[in-house]
Structure formats: structure tokens, C-alpha cells
Amino acid sequence: MTRIEFYVLPDSTTAGRTRAACQLAAKGWQHGLPVFIRCQDESQCAEMDDLLWGFRAERFIPHELFDEDPQAPVVIGLEQAPAIGQGLLINLAPTLSPHTDGFSRVIEIVNQQPELLTVCRENFRLYRQRGYDPKRVEL
Image 1 (cartoon, rainbow, N blue to C red):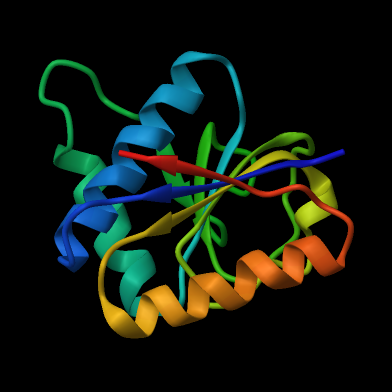
Image 2 (cartoon, rainbow, N blue to C red):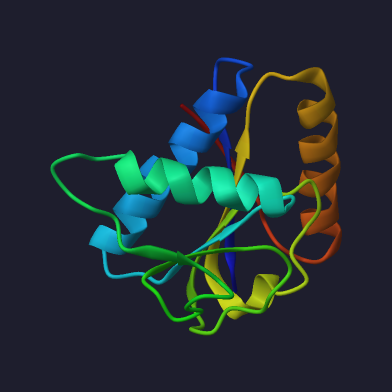
């Protein structure tokens, strides 16, 4: 069964959330997992693409937008199904992915923005309703 984790950040900045997504993508890729970063819209996809280009000066994180190469080690997309299964999904979108079962692990990144906390609490509840056992991880 897919492992679901909610990584809880102590701050409320959007930048902290996207930086955490970059760190998790790098870690997943270094451990040999295919990584899919699910964004909320095209603008966030472009932002993540830019961030990953310059995230680590000493080590490039190989990534592409889904429409450019759905089989890249780190893929940035929206609602697309993963081209390579059983990898890591980093969900930045406010809803659950329709392809949750296609991943071995799902990470939801939560910060202290009140609106995001409300959305993530609802997602936590929805995962439980669907038979998953989501865990909370404090960062």
C-alpha cells in the first residue's frame, strides 16, 4: 500500500514549501526513486522548474516538465498519471492525486498558512477514508 506522509513546516511562507519540495525531490532522486512533483497550476510548474535549475550549484537535479519528458528522473506536472510507476509523489496541489496508487510514497508539504492547514487536514481525513494510514512528520 502507498505510504502517505504529511511533512509539516514551522513557517508559513510559500518559498519554504517549494524549497522543501526541491530538497525532497533531490533526496528521492539520489535514492533512485522516480519523482513526480504535482503542482496546483502551470505557473507553479514553471516556478518549480526554475527552482530546480538552480537549487544545488554543486549537483544538478535532472528534471523536466511532464509535457517535455514524462520519463525524466524528476517530473513536474499537474494531473497526469506517472509514466514510471511506484515512485515518489510530492503533492503541492490542494487536492489528492487521482493516481495515488501509482506511487509507492506520497508526501504532502504543509506549512502554517491557515488556508493550507485547512486543506491539508481535509486531505488527511480523505486519505484515511480511502484506507490509507497517513503519518505526520514535523520538520
